[in-house]
Amino acid sequence: MKIEAAVLRGASATYAIEPVELAPPGPGQVLVRIVGAGFCHTDMLPRTPGFMARPPLITGHEGAGIVEEVGPGVTGIAPGAHVVLSFDSCGACRNCLGGHPAYCEHFLRLNLTGSGREGAGLDGDGPATDRHGQPVAARWFGQSSFATHALASARSIVEVDEDLPLELLGPLGCGVQTGAGSILLALRAGAGSSVVVFGAGGVGLSAVMAARVAGAATIVAVDLHESRLSLARELGATATVHGGDDIVARLRELTRGGTQYALDTTGNPAVISTAVDALRPTGTVGLVGSPSRPLTLSPAALTQGKNVKGILEGDAVPQLFIPQLLELWRQGRFPFDRLVRTYPLSAINEAERDSVAGTTIKPVLLPGS
Image (cartoon, rainbow, N blue to C red; front, side):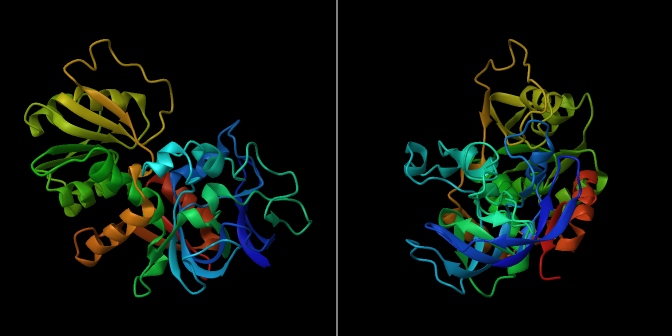
């Protein structure tokens, strides 16, 4: 079928809205008409030299929409269903079977190659071709949702109630899920605990809201943008700190000797080192931002039982966790919609610039606009 998609044709190129021919859904696939798709910093990874997914490529991995067709072997999902799309997983490896699909043994291949296979996958047998009949990678995170339609893996589908604002739900599939799941599932912050969140973007502010849901007594947000710190206070932070070179003493003061939990969303090694230094004995730092450079810690950094934990997708099972977040939203306890600003799909380059500049916390692209 003919669709329109935002195609990235080079690491330094802007997105171009192009006609694309999309194949019908194959085994284990679902055709979804995209209503809204969140823009995430992960969608910029194909701009990194040497990255495993190479243009031409359709990115987008926070899609939400309406099922139009299901492929062979797909059960439990019917045309007309309202759905959120999350990450892909195999469903058969030890981690998937153990309830940790975010740590699927095939996660990189399924989500970050752009094709579901090793390499770029532009060998002519992919699901999408351009107007010249040339292949376009269209399996980014099992969905490639910066388009009017996406072929999604049935494993990534989360059905939601039809009365929900579908155009706003896409970010639940990755960024919001990652921030909230990191606090509630991976770190398991509890009532009365202390939490410091480094970076008040979409992931960080979702973590702040989740810490409030968890009943944390002290919730500190650290960022360089005062506007984001102000929003963090509105969303549940009990204190905020403007990031800098020497904030450990202030963080220890606010958390009465050190925080039990810290979450880094920046990937900046200097920030991660600060997070470790701000821990109390037995405290844990969760890392959701991929370090931009090698991370070096002092020999004594992890003494006194301190821990560093890598986290993917909040260690969530999307089909269980996303409905829980939506119920919290209905109750007014998890207002993730306050992070969202919408753009037409044709304004994807503006949305990317605003995301990089920090002027928009969570851009959501609307293909129908």
